[in-house]
Each structure stands twice: as C-alpha cells, then as structure tokens.
Length: 281
Image (cartoon, rainbow, N blue to C red):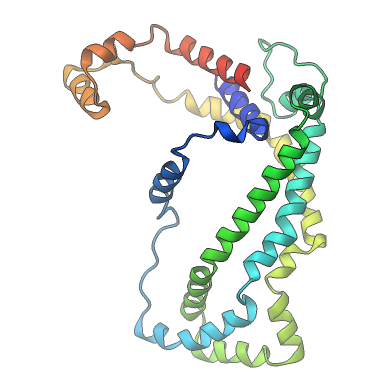
C-alpha cells in the first residue's frame, strides 16, 4: 500500500503541468499564507549577537558586499534553474511511463502493465498543448522563484554578515577585506558563490539522478520495514468515549457523524483513494 501511495503521488507530480491553470482553487493564496506561517521557523532561530560580535558587523558587512553583492541570487537562479529544469523535464518526459515505475522501485506485481509509451507521447494525444503549457509553467515558475529569492536576498545577506561576525575575529575579517582589495582577492570574492553555478560543477551533478534512482528501491523497502514497528492508525470505533468527544470537537462535527462516516476497511479505502488519484492523473 505504501508503494502504491507513493507511486500515485509521483504520478500526480509528474503530470501536474498538464492540469489546466483555471482549475486552481481560488483559496490558493490563503493556503500559501498558511503554509508560510506554518514553516516560518523551520530553520530555527539564531541567538542574538554579543556586543563583541555586534562590533564586528561593519567589517563582516564589507566581506558580504564582496562575496554576495546585491543581485547574486537572481544571477544564480538564471544560471542554474532554467538549464536544470529543462534537462530534468526533458529526460523524465522521454522515459516510458512503465520504465519510470520500475526504475523507482514503485512497480508492484499487482499493478497493471503500463506499456512503453513515454509521458511525452501520451500527453501528445491527451493534450496537444502539453509541451507549450509545460514550458510556460516552467518559465513562470523560474521567474516567480527568482523574484522571491531577490525579495528575500537582503535578509539573507544580513544573516550572512551576522554569521561572519560570529565565526571570524576582527583581525580575520580585516585580513579578508584586505585580500579582497587585491586583483586575485577581488576576483575570488566575485566568483566564490557564482562558481557553484558553473557548468563544470553543475554537470558533475548529473550523477545525482542515477544515484537517487538506484537508491529508491532500497529506500522504499526501508520505509516499509521501519513502518512495521508502529501500530496501525485507529478508526473512530477504536477510540475511548473521551477521545471520540475530543475528536468531534476538534473537527467541528458530531460523534454520530464521525461514526456514520467511519470506513469499514481503512486499508481498502486507502487503496481505492490511491486508485482514484491515479485514474484522475
């Protein structure tokens, strides 16, 4: 069941670009705001700077101005995101959909044979505008991500300056700034972040996808094995009277309504939901 659920999710994501833009829910903006609030502190909070560290901030800001000047994020996005998305989508869409399931370890014996048609070939029949729509969605996504990264860049640069103020002594920051005034130091500072977007570096990342694909079957097996240590999820009838009352209160409904809608077979109901998801995509 776990493999089938993940396959349904993977298939849905793979074909997301085919979904009509008009079908997007009008509450997407509100949901995005809720998600932003939910994950706003996912990276934790930093400790305030000490007086000594605060005193090092001007020198630290000079370092950041050299190694991460304004506009760096936009340049990094332009140099990396479009080629990466084009290559990733091109390679993925040319694969036979049946091969995708087998390569990722998501294929199971009880699944029907999916055939050898590629995603591109299938979508050419179902949606002749699929390729153009996919490109449009890719372009819009890249632009929105670039705009967002540009918007948050000042805060990132400020955080980077604080990090240098914490990790480097005043004399070390002075050494760095002195080095950055030399021709070699200035060139290094200007390239120190952008070099990670160089084609020589990015092409080396091509090894990542085969490695991830090869890891998928083992990952699925480990997830399934690790999940066996936990008890199955409970249904409404498994709860105590107190728990039933609390659950009804939390859901804003009644105990009778929850009892009436309780699935008779959780495992089977989940499989039906997965099958429906696959059919819709």
